[in-house]
Length: 379
Image (cartoon, rainbow, N blue to C red):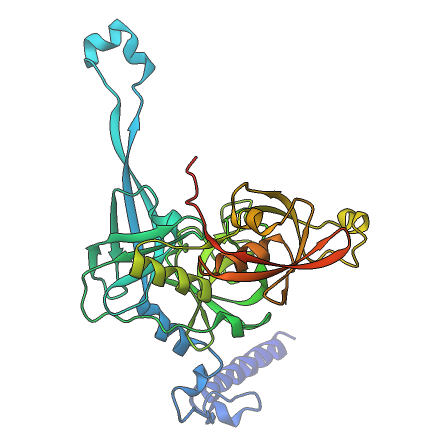
């Protein structure tokens, strides 16, 4: 028995040794061997072929036009109450309130080779010093050309050469579902591109600005993105990133951008005149709720209810009264109070415009000479 066991052990040892030699030197002879097989790989002939489904060209076109904005202002910190104790004053001396600098971050968009930059008013509001950093690393202090708190827009100017201005797109042509890219400097990490779609158009009643007509997008917009660019799939500017809806401070997929049509109008007025001039007829308006529509026997909630009329204003002179319902402006339907204010603001002061109102169920057309909107009061 012992002899048979020795013969088996020797045979097994020799077999394993032969298997090791064959698998190492001639593995292709084994049924499971394949380490020496030739693998055919198909490579793309055009190195750009793998990028055709991406948006690198759009991002590459717009990114040099987006800048980082660093603002700072002095704040006074009250004296520590402990310094009222004579014991502490004996060791630490008298301590008055101290001055510290608060640093904020934002973004902006180069709009012309002359050095004009479009950003948000809240990015540069109350800043003592504004520094702009270009995508190529250059930095310089910027001066404020002007700002418009009612649309939250501002224009800066820097003295740089060889700037790359953004290409203006047409916000009127974008549709819900279109691809957009948001470019800015979120949280100060550096220039960043995020992608999303246009989630909605004409967003208003958000309580952000006096004049609201936002593009809503799910492209990630975070603190520091304010004033940056929202561009279409071709890299053209369609909006200025302004605000987010968030309960945590970060992006929840609900961001808002000012349409480029509105931003361009405000920007050009600031550069040409230093201020923004808006039309005004001197009324207070409110939306028509379903309850109001029932009480006024209206077919729907479209239009704007005149809640008040400023004595001596253009509407007062034209005979408009509280309780009137404004349904058309220059022959175009009024959807709600916000759209009515936006359209009146676009009118040139001194121009005569025609309003269609409903009074006691009867339609009337009135001529109103548009006035100049008074400056907003600062709280």
